[in-house]
Image (cartoon, rainbow, N blue to C red; front, side, top):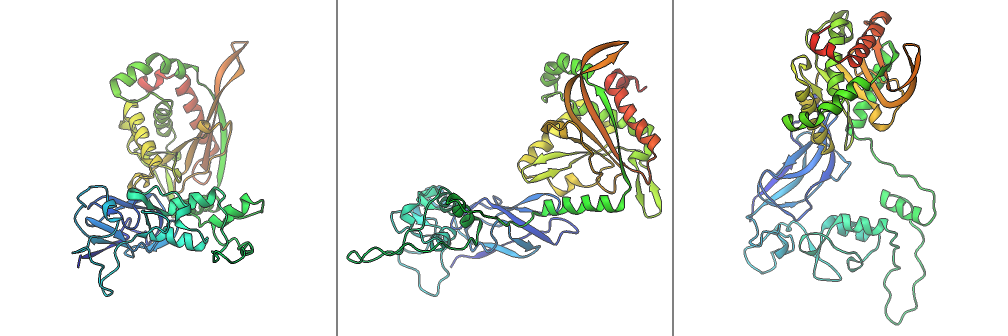
Length: 433
């Protein structure tokens, strides 16, 4: 009998005791390699992948997507086995764990990982798919299978239901009259709700709030309740930076292997402004104010499951190329839900760029315990007065939300003026004036 290895929720942070199950990257009955990612789990800070603890067949998935599990809890198991000879993840045996002979296993033996012959063909139905088939009174032969070796997956059944499949009436003997149509079932699941919608019904779908979204909500409420938040605004002529970017972007990309964007200019301008106004880079701890001589700047990035704010450490020591390269890498990780908790920890100040989504003006919320956040917005050509003349310039509104408990209005306004002066005259970055 093969060994059974449990798949457990690992420790993913010092203060994290509960996680939410994300996407299962493998299905019950799939052969997996030791160290291969099985499932994504979402913590209150980031998404993490759980690798297979051994090579074998995945079985007994006990926690489905969106369900919650505690650290150390078993969520599946691996039946240890060698890779199938055909190398396709076990399709030659229908996805089931191999046995010592072709004979049927004895009743006392543990059930193989998981597949059963499909009712209407030569494929195999995965357990999660079979449960959905039974729930919706469907036959496996009605649903196209897309899994390895002709397996019918849960996703296949869900797709079939979402495409408007109706439930057939229970099968009747050939000579019996047709059974009356079954009454509509209550909307007890998201899949059923979608089915009812296709028939013209009003519906609601209830989904648990993700760990990341719960954390974002909690921190935003905390900021509103504990800090005295104010926002001040200014506008910046982006023409000088745009001219530099247009002139050097090709040479920059060729030398550094990364695109030259606007964020590196704002990150370096922020460093200069924080040096001039250190209260914006400070935080309140109890009855004390903590001032830093370093600038760890968080960059708000939209990811696969929400907004993340990875932190660039010691931006005062980074070049523009290092800033752009770090942001590009964090954006890639965020899109793949692979940001680690350590990527999001700390930070003395935050920059949020709503302009990439078309925002013209906003009031960003401070990320506690920080005392300030800079909001960038879309660039629009507007008429402005220069030297007594009305000219058209690419303008951007910028906003600074700050904690008035530690930052005075004079400092907040001066901070934004410093950003404006540096961006409108980028030579200041090199001359440090």
